Length: 417
Image (cartoon, rainbow, N blue to C red; front, side, top):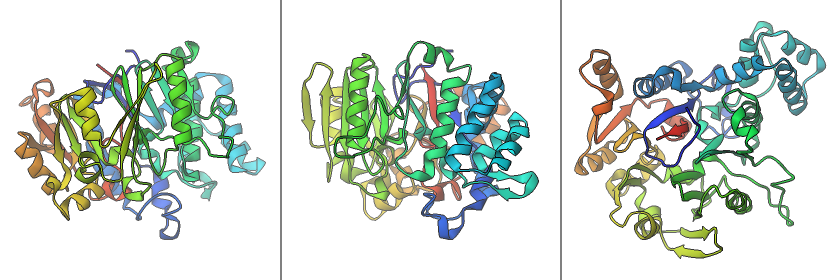
C-alpha cells in the first residue's frame, strides 16, 4: 500500500495511533501545564476509552493497517544493527543522561527500549530517566502526509521535542518509509540548513493539527499558537519547489490556547460538509485567509467559509459546534466538538459529550451511534462497515477529552483513497 493522502475525507486505509502510555500517570498537577495537559487524568480509564477508538479503526481498516507508534519504534530499532545505538545516542545526548543509564538502555530489548524512550521510566530500576511525553497520543501533530510526500513537523513547545526526535527516527529508518527517503519525498522541518530561523530570530514551528490536505492541489496551514508564519513560509516554498501542491492556504487564527490548531475549529466530514466553530470559521471573527499560488499569485478571504465556497465547493454546508449558539458553542468547541476524523465521506468519529452539536448533526441528516454498539453489531454480522453512510460514531470521552484533543488529533493518516 502506498503512502499517499490527498484529502481529509477519502477512505482511510492506514493510520498511526498511540495508546496512552504509563508516562501519562506521572504527570503531576504542578507540572501539568508545562507538559501541555490541562489536568491530570486517570490512565486506566483513558486507555479503555482509547482502546474503543483503536478497535473501531480496526473494524474499518483492518488491524494490520492501524499502526501503533510504540510498535513502529520497536521495529525501527530492530531493523538495522546500528539503529539501536543511534537512537540511544541521540536521546542520551538530548536528555543529558549519565553514561551508566545509556549503558543500561543498550542492554534492553528493542521492545523494552521503545517503551522507556516514550515513558521515560526505567521500570526494572524504578528510576525516572526523563520526562514523559504525554502528548504523543496526538499523533496528528508529529507528521503529515501531503499527496505522496511526508512532512516531519517541528513542535513549538519543549515538552514535545522528544516526540519529534523519535518521529524523525521512525520516518527516516523504518522499512515502510524508506522508499520515501530514497526518493527524496520526506520534508524534514528540523533540517536547519533548509529550514533555519529567520534573520530576526523567529523559529520554525509547525504542528500537524494545523495542516489539512483538501485535495491534491490545496493544502491548508493554520498560523496559530503552535505554528509560526516563518515556518509556514519556508514549507510553502519547499512544497512549491517540489511541485507537491499548487496552492498553500494560510489560515490566521487567534493565538489562544482554546484554538491551539485549526483542527480545534473545523474539520471536513464529507465532500460538502464541515463541522465548525461559527464565530471564527463562518463569521471570520479574528481570522483571515491568504491563498498563495505556485505561479506567484495571492488571493485573500475574510473567512474560511468564503474561501471554501469560492475555491473548493460553492455548496459547502457548515454544521456548527454547539449548534452555533452560546454558551454551547464555546463549551463544545473546548471539548473538541469540531475535531472529528472521517473514516470515509460522511462517516466520522466524535466524542460522546457534545450533546448540542449532536442536535446539529441530526438536523443535517446524520445518524448517531455509539462505537461500542457498532463494534458489537459488526462482530455479529449485523452491520457491514462498507455500507455505513451519513453517520457520526461516538467514542467515550470522560478522560480522553481532558487531554484537549479529539479523534482528528489522535490519528495520523498515512494512506487514503
